[in-house]
Amino acid sequence: MDPIYVTGHRNPDTDSIVSAMAYAALQNALGNREYVAARLGHISDETKLVLDRFGFEPPVRIQTMRTQVRDLDYDTPPALGCAVTMGRAWDALQSDR
Image (cartoon, rainbow, N blue to C red; front, side, top):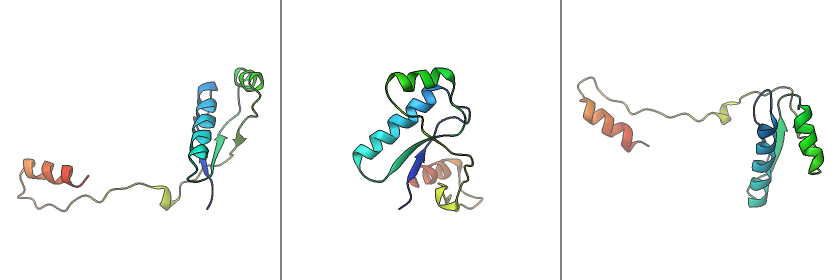
């Protein structure tokens, strides 16, 4: 199975980089799949300083991020007729969750 890449912002700050690294490490410790911390942009001098201080390498840089159909989470809404009251429509939407 392909790894799941964990990223932050397109122009990552220190918080974004460290959060991606921490979440990937947590998920790897839980052992369900392989998670890889990644970044979508260049790291700042501040981020490099923090990573160096604590002995971490910067995450791998991903040049292009594309969505695949299997990545999408979509809902199929319930089919309701035009005569359905707002209350019943609300109930149908809530029960479909």
